[in-house]
Structure formats: C-alpha cells, structure tokens
Image (tube, rainbow, N blue to C red; front, side, top):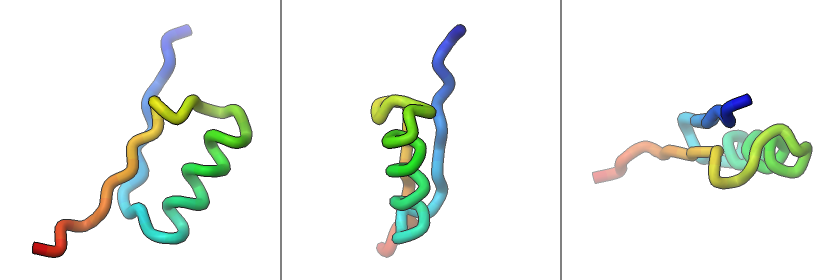
Length: 41
C-alpha cells in the first residue's frame, strides 16, 4: 500500500498535538506529515 501524506493546516498548539499523536501512534511516519502556518508578513 502506498504511503499517504497528511497535511495539518495550522501548526499551533492543537496542530502540533495532532501531528505528534499521528506519529507517536504509528499512524504515519514524520516524513509524511506536513504542517503549515499562517504567513505573518
């Protein structure tokens, strides 16, 4: 089965917690999890 990438829009406290849970729970590898944040410029 081909690995799927997971994107989390909003890398604040909640987004970070979700990403950690996904990786620590063995759902996905870190290289398949993408976090984004709002551009503050």
